[in-house]
Image 1 (cartoon, helix red, strand yellow):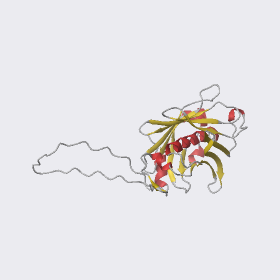
Image 2 (tube, one colour; image 1 turned 135 degrees about the vertical axis):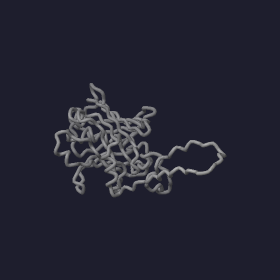
Image 3 (cartoon, rainbow, N blue to C red; image 1 turned 60 degrees about the vertical axis):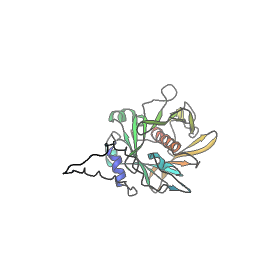
Image 4 (cartoon, rainbow, N blue to C red; image 1 turned 45 degrees about the horizontal axis):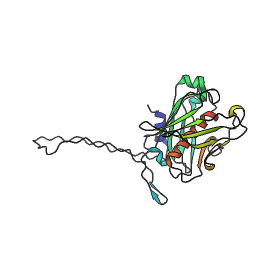
Length: 275
């Protein structure tokens, strides 16, 4: 069940234009004899509501068939956590909510966590959860699923799965056992082959648990820099944001969605302070 908070986040964001579905017309009732000339056919499958964005980018035109297609051609995306008053008045952290924005500040996704109060109390930021990302049409575009994992050396490595409706695995982000710096691999959901390597700052402390608040991660494949993720303070918003910069303009929408999943895993592993 999707969280109402995510829907409200989209409704109250001034930059969102919600696509309206056409209402079903009332069935026509005849008061006289009607001859049937053809057999009734099943109604065609209702297509996905189109995203209320311009589909003309640069010199090409594309039709967004999935919710994450709106990530195509964006130079960067920025993840902002939303806070409410009851979060600071209760001892147990509530389910996190985020807004994923474009470089111009437009809201692309509203992300809403789904987890139990017991897991939040016992496991803190390492808790298992599902993160539902709704696009501008209030449809589910991506789902991030994180299972309970205690570590990468002697226990099950921490990982996050990226799913797309109606239930297909797009890929996963898996932690690599390292001592001096955080290393993750982004794998393809079909072949399980590594697509990208995510490397954090060196000398991060024992088992890479002590990252500074402002950190930088490199995302590369075959030695070539493809993207980067950083976590830094933004004075204009008076909060920390997690930022993704796509260095390679040839990255597909699927690859960008996988990198977005990696950014959420890093957010929970290193930058969550509320337990």
